[in-house]
Amino acid sequence: MDAAHLLAAYDDQLRTDAETPGAVSVARHGPLRLVTFAGGRGFITYRSLEGADAAATRRLVTEALDHYRTDPRITRVEWKTRGHDHAPGLHEALLEHGFTPDEPESIMIGEARSLIAGVTLPEGVTLRRITGEADVRAMSAMADEAFGEPADETTADALLRRLAAGDGMELWAAEAGGRFVSAGRLEPVPGTDFAGIWGGATLKEWRGRGIYRALTAQRARSALRLGKTLINSDSTEFSRPILERSGLLKVSTTTPYLWQR
Image 1 (tube, rainbow, N blue to C red):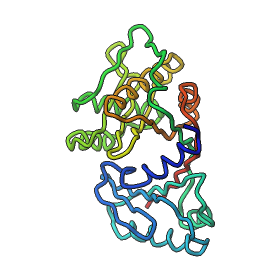
Image 2: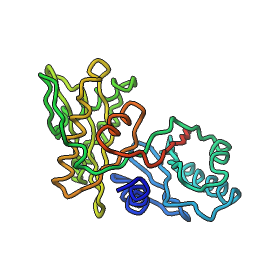
Image 3: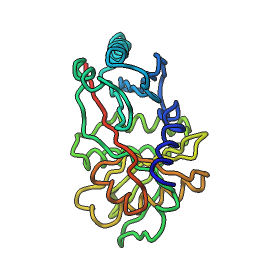
Image 4: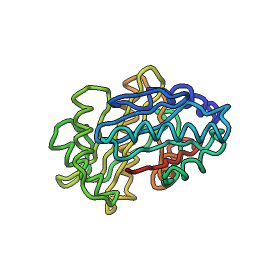
């Protein structure tokens, strides 16, 4: 499958409610899906803004933000943009309403089977699936450390709620010397060919040893067992080259715009 076919599959299969597992609620407003997650987080996404001119786009931004402002529990909102969308005036409208663009990421897609060949772990490193509360909290704290952020218990709380709900999410981690050194999620998407690989984090001193690639391969094997043939990921510049070497293609970009109360 070439990049055009993979991007079409992404737009058709993933830019639906399948994009937001674990949502507390989803409200529709025109083409927008206004999603609320636990912990006071709003998330705005859509299949397309095709046909909207700059004035219509500005109205959508205003009305979407008004939706969240009426709920005092919402403290932050992400508007997810894609580089291949036709959305005149969107960037300007988001800035006018107090959104700040974060770093762009690459939308990577490819066949799951391409990720599993020729992968070995360094000596002393093992992989396992994480399910228990203590492990989830330790894994989450490691990921915060890897990203240079303070430990945030709300992330672990949200993961534990999803595990309890049994929505299909899997947590995988690499362990060495009795501590987690790398971790990531697998998100099988019901009713599609896709499983997403998300949240990849590796401690700085353990990078460059093939651990992230091995963790990705393990998640791809699990996806294939579940009947998922395609893998997608929004990748930073740390993980993009690894996924490209494994055969995934960059089909577009995504840039989150963030608003905080």
